[in-house]
Amino acid sequence: GWFPVVTSLTSVSSQASLSRSNDPNGRCVYSFAVVSPQESSCPGGSAKSEMDEVLTRLTLLEALVSRLTARGEQGTASGGLRRSEENLQEAYAQVTRERNQLQLDQERLNAQVRKLQGTVAELNRETERLRQRPCEQTHTSGGTLHENRPVPASRLLPEGSQRASSPKLSSNISSECGELLSVGDPVLHRKADAITGKYGVWLQDPDPRGPYYTNKTVWRIDSVGKEIRQLFVYEDMDQFSKGFPMKVLVLPEPVESTGATMYRGSLYYQRRRSRTLLRYNLTSESLASRLDLPHAGFHGQHPYSWGGYTDIDLAADERGLWVIYSTGKAKGAIVISQLDPASLEVRRSWETKIRKNSVGNAFMVCGRLYTVASYMTPNTTINYMFDTTTGEGQAVAVPFVNKYRYNSMVDYNHAQRKLYAWDNFHMVTYDVRLGWVGQGRS
Image (cartoon, rainbow, N blue to C red):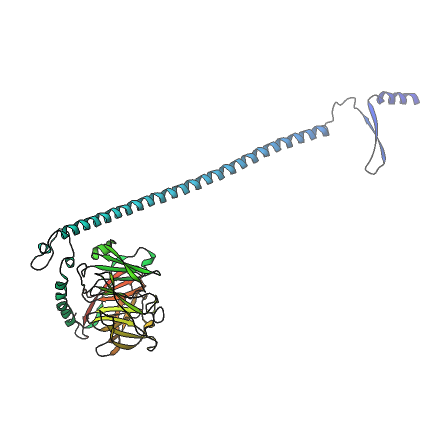
């Protein structure tokens, strides 16, 4: 019985194997494996084969993920490039548009310069031609010029003939004086195109003197800045509206604010940072008179409500030359003085009961002071009147429009029967109606 068993083990031993190894607990474990004589493989497959298949699938999956990731990164990069390209194209288009606009502006400015140069050349030719022709050949019996191109009559008329006609004109206007009954809506003549023109002075001389300028000549001073000396001269309102000055005068001393006025061939203005009044003769282009206005506040001591160093405001009307200001003695109330047009000496003064810094502006008409209640309220009123003939003042309520809401200058021209104003870059005029309350005549 013993030997068969041994034989059996011996026959099996050629197809079996014995191995030993330590288990996780450190114990020695013997393992005995026998190859099956009938089955070539286990029905469930080998563990190695399954692992190989899993590894293969994982490798394929990793490769697929890598390809997808690479495509996504490539798509993102190309999208960013497309957006950058679009931004560059848009910026280039904007630059091109701006360049084209600048070229158009340059061409327009060049055209204006050429036109202005042509106008100057034509004026020079006309001046030279008139110099060579006797004056009497250019006049009719009535003293009116007849030329192909309009030329101001005062450039050829003797100074004495102009002065001879002035008293008659002044007499007629004086006879038509009255109280201010109404003020029309503003009429725009020009808008300043630079910051220096936010406020300023623009005028026409109601009673011009000298051989060069007429009552059609327009004068303008831009008052923004420290050293204001330029006085722009325009032949007439049409040239003024187009912005074509025929001359620019440089004043010998700087101007303070917007209180200048024009009267009888002279510009009257306040010297900067002083109480000094100056008369600048437009014919000789030189200073003719100067005077320190006694006790007058200046440079922000007693301005109008909008400020701007409007302490001293010169004005002209049917009755002469005036200055509107205040003093320490008057404690800020408006003082009116009538001046001698030649020497600037004070002839007489009146003290009112309205404070200067409580009103937006003021002007003189027929020897009467009128104040504008506000410089910026669109629909305000002329709220006070002082009559220098009677020495009495009273409240009034004449409607007045500040269309552009920053009215820095209001001045009366008795020859044109208009108010001239500078309202926030805009140069405007207002028609006025004079008469007597209850009669309504103009």
